[in-house]
Length: 244
Image (cartoon, rainbow, N blue to C red):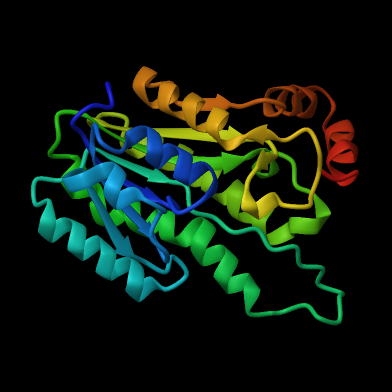
């Protein structure tokens, strides 16, 4: 699929990898961004081909309203959905300042809203000549680390969701794709880890993946992590517990 003159829904396009994806897709596609804040300069860069729908991905009502607005505006369906929006909290359940309410928020943004968006937009996508869903995942969905237990669980769940829906949609025009990211230099990872890759590089690789139709893509160090985990899971676990 060539990403030209397509109708694409993107979550999390206000910063990080999502913003770099937006910058590469805007102008040559009709792009609908779902996030709480609007991407910087997107209106000017995308002119009539850009639309921002203020959406709180942690709120099912807000997500449902966004789905309905898209369905009303594009009754013939959309060509693609990129689930990029995510948050990563660092909860230690034994910490005195642990916020119990953060659990539901992290699950809603990282796992529930992608599932809701796929479900809500799927019937329209089935009307298109070809369509895709790209779920942005993480190496932490393969091997978890202790600092981000909920985040890791949501990414593992997203992986299983992607594979389950891929089987369900195997005989349709809708492709289920997934990109596994290493540590990326974004606002979410500020002050953590080293050896980060740029969000621009990640966006470029994701765009190429969508256009090639490749089901799953391991980016950067994720390739090595997956290989180690396949051969020596205990070693992969020790590596991840040392931190980013």
